[in-house]
Image (cartoon, rainbow, N blue to C red):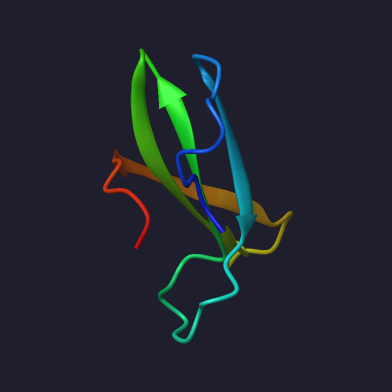
Length: 69
């Protein structure tokens, strides 16, 4: 699930949802959107486990919003 135009994010806020369309290990674990500096962005996040051990973390990427896909 991601932003579909029905909800207006406040600036500097966003939301991520479990990616239920993930079919490949390279696909993000979470997808969503955020408004940054007044600009709507697609947000993708992957759960990462450090090779050296330690705590899992989220790796996050932002790109220009392309709309519902």
